[in-house]
Amino acid sequence: MLCEIKSKLGFELIELGHGIRISLMPGIQKMFDAGEVRFSSLHNFCPLPVEVMAASPDCYQYSAIYPQERERAIKQTFQTIDFAAQLGAPFVVLHLGAVNMKPITDQLIELTKAGKYLSRKYVRLKLRAVQKRERNAATYLQRVKDCLRRVIDYAASKNVRLALEGRRGYEEIPTEREFPALLEELFITSTVHRGDWKVVKTDNRKCARCWRHRPDVDAASELDRRCEEVVNG
Image 1: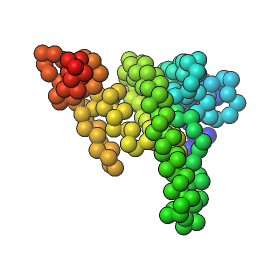
Image 2 (image 1 turned 180 degrees about the horizontal axis):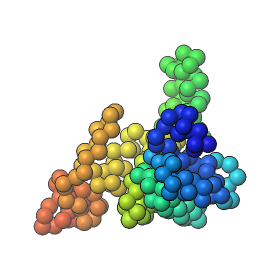
Image 3 (image 1 turned 90 degrees about the vertical axis):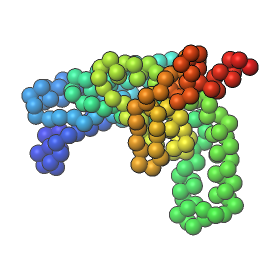
């Protein structure tokens, strides 16, 4: 298939998807070593976990309730990063998980297609979904952040960059509103512009309490204004 993608479709760079079985990796590695193919990225989890029978990028989630599942997600991501480094792929694409709630997106889309996006039913469904997600999201986001810190460190050690996929489902993490704060806290950014995303490496100091890089971090206390107010009452 890789030969066809390159020779017949003309692509110079290819992403390896999350359905690649581990039995295929030696052949893929051989083609890469021979200079027959180059890769832009690997989509987590690649290769597919041996116990999973079909392509399923959300089979293990950083947001999962059980720590065993989160640990499995991290270990499988490490494996993906290892293969990305071996194959010269600069990026690994990640799904971050989801808030545990009834999926609402498809239902809202169907109502919109039917011209009912201003109906009471649409508004009621949407508001209930927003209220539930806002009420529960913080716990799931914290699990994601805890996992990502380990993944970020490991990826940096392998000189592999991470790409966070924006998903279509409202229950999925992160939403557009959550993205800037997530990037600021974990990826050491100072400026995030919505729409045409632009991430700029920060020159700000890191707060010793919250670990965020902020422009108001005091050189003496090593705390930003908000954390100084918390610490000093």
